[in-house]
Length: 150
Image (tube, rainbow, N blue to C red; front, side, top):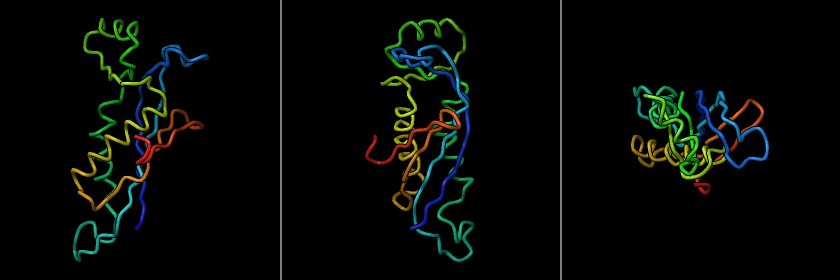
């Protein structure tokens, strides 16, 4: 088995309501999302992806559709953060994505893993497996999620 990794970036806002420091305030990040997939090399002679685990552009398209396009330039909010959700509801056309838990890097990575695992399975079946999702909240801070972290 070989692993490949594709990295995508997006911008989003969030807050962690009960955080003891700065993250309790409304703020945003330039997130980076890395998805690592594993699989056997395609050996079909003449295939467009011969010699690859998967075409990086296809992996990118799947990640864009499942996560990046949904979360990019949105406010990632905890469903129980009523003051923020009520405020955001007053902004016509504002993009808000609600989560079951506060939108920490850890929770977002685990959520992204579930979304990407389903999207990859829909496209590739069992030929590919999602090994890891790494979500960078800053260049120096990230969370990793794998199959057992969902």
